[in-house]
Length: 218
Ligand SMILES: CCCCCCCCCCCCC/C=C/[C@@H](O)[C@H](COP(=O)(O)O)NC(=O)CCCCCCCCCCCCCCC
Image 1 (cartoon, rainbow, N blue to C red):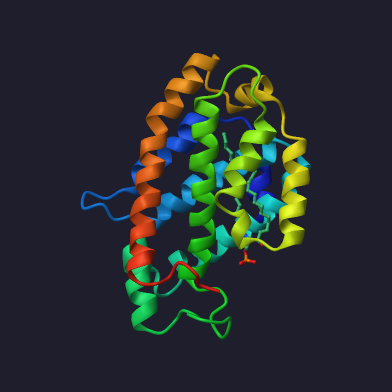
Image 2: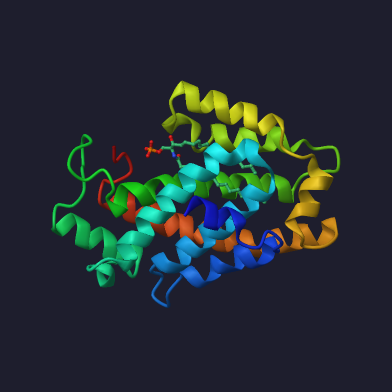
């Protein structure tokens, strides 16, 4: 799985990836899991194109994506159509470890929570990128976004490794290039369109998880 995601055609446009988050929202503001997963697959592809230093990050993301895909394709797949239906199904059937790790280490709820926190990182990072200037450093934007989102949930060793990886991020011009969206003005415009959608998907999930007390799942 890691390999197939890594080697699928490397050339792509970040606009298309971010567009998939648009397709996540149903009419009544539920979040489709299939589309959410597709969005993440695209992001992982982008991450892989930045080089093998990020391999440990993409590997973990791929693992989590695969767990969710297995739920979607499993015999109870119809319960996993939206994040809302997944939460309801897993809670009603006691399929979630609520306070300490136990017999359900791969619940959809705890797995998605990790990606959900990473989506917050993405939102913060992209917002910084959108408002950045030519001499802004991607490594700084990235670690600031990380410190405000994922870092509090990670042990020291992961924070350390992440910090080291951020240092070798390409600079802003090269980064914009890999995004393959066009000149900087177009990148900024694209981000301006994509961010509210990502933010909405994040907020809806955050409220759902808060409502059910799921924000600290082990
Ligand atoms: C562009 C640079 C990309 C930097 C990515 C920033 C996120 C750094 C995350 C570091 C995670 C390290 C790997 C290990 C994580 C796990 O310990 C930890 C906890 O899991 P557990 O409870 O099962 O043990 N896992 C997680 O928190 C999930 C992390 C998922 C990270 C996915 C990041 C994908 C980034 C996509 C980049 C796209 C950038 C697009 C910008 C234009």
